Length: 245
Image (cartoon, rainbow, N blue to C red; front, top):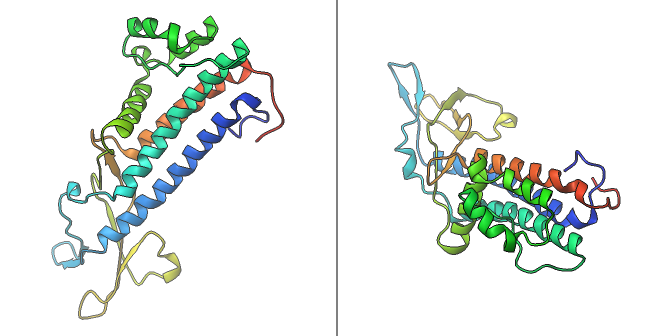
């Protein structure tokens, strides 16, 4: 939220939660790269006479089971993003009414009819124009990312961790005699042949995918931006607080 100099006091917790989701996503990005390095290191490159270079024979990418910690981290990002939306609705209702309003949440409905049935209870205390903003982002108005966020949040809380797997299509770079200072994110195989050649390997962009095949990082980034845009829409509904970057 660095685009804004002032954040209303009522939304500072929501902004903090959004920033936390961003930090968790950065951790996930590093986790994926380290996981990739660890998995690649299990295999040894061989020289391909036909290609005239070294190659790495890897099994089907779905055979790389992700660590449980990675699944938990994905769930934590999703949970934080979902909480931001609920925080916003809670604070709007309390600000409008002048006291805490119980039972509110950011409605995610599959249809206009479902939204209309739920808004009286779950968006109680919101003004009509605020309810219309919430409805703009609904799945039936094109908010596919919001529907997915809600489903993933519910699944993480109520049923199971997210299934994920690594390396959709594997692209590698081969190099030899690379300076050790340049080996970040590379796997170094030393003395792979009789001539003592060192081979360094990495994928250009390691990929971890969700159970439905969506790339995890890209999907989380879309959700993060969607939540951020909703938060921005409601900044002007409160009196500004102290300066906050």
